[in-house]
Each structure stands twice: as C-alpha cells, then as structure tokens.
Image (cartoon, rainbow, N blue to C red; front, side):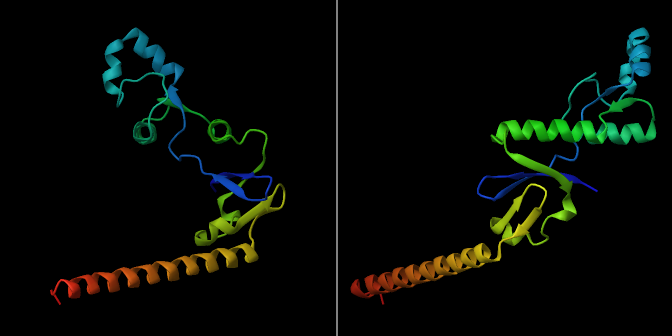
Length: 169
C-alpha cells in the first residue's frame, strides 16, 4: 500500500504529497564495495559506475532490476526512511513546515479526483469532499462555460458582419 502525506492548511484545504516511487537512495553493499576496492575492474560488472550516490529514477529502476538478479549488490533505504526523507524535503520546499499532517494510505483519500478542489480535511479526521464547495465550484465552472460560449457567438457574429460589410458574403 502506498503512503501519502496529507498536509492540512488552516482553512481546512489540503495538499497531498505523493513520493516519487523510484526516488529511494541506494549504494553498493559494503561487501561489494570492498571487493571493488581490491579489484577496481569489477566496477564494469555493475550496471553503472556511480558509487555510492543518489541516482535519478531511471538508474534507481535499473538498480532495483539488477539487485533482483544479483542479490546483495545494493543497499536501499527502507520504506520508512525513504518516505520520511521524501516527505520532509517536499514539506520544506513547498513551505508546509509548521502545518499539521497525517501519513495515510493512498486508498484513504476520495476516489474522484475531479472534485479535488473541494477536498478538505483535519488532522486525525482524514480527507473528505465538501459538497457545498463542490457545488459552488461546478456552478462557477458552468457559468464560465456559458460566458465563453456567449463570447464566441459574439465574435462569430462580428466576423460574419465584417465579411458582409466587405461584400465577401
């Protein structure tokens, strides 16, 4: 089950943080690193030569695949270390420090993403859809759509009139 972090804003709106699935840090195991120190030529047998490092998602996927075929080559962060690091980094970058939050399973948020702007929540109470806000947002969207249709009709009428005035219609 994938964990996400729900950050609660003072106005009850929420921000959801989804950790990048392949962002775990990893390095070579001590055993492999020691063998490479003794025989640097062994590094060519590892799928890439960045040791130990934080690697991009594509390289992390390759490392995971290599590890499944060659157990004991890499050491990966465990899930709790990875999530805490990923969440903390995003909290800081996004300016969420000091706000309350819950780490929950992804299935515990509303299923319908179209109503995301109406999601609200409070610490310990989870995320829910504010039906009143959802209705207001839908009404506003419909109002904007009608205005846009009206503007397009006016522009079309003006274009037709312009063509008629020039004798092109």
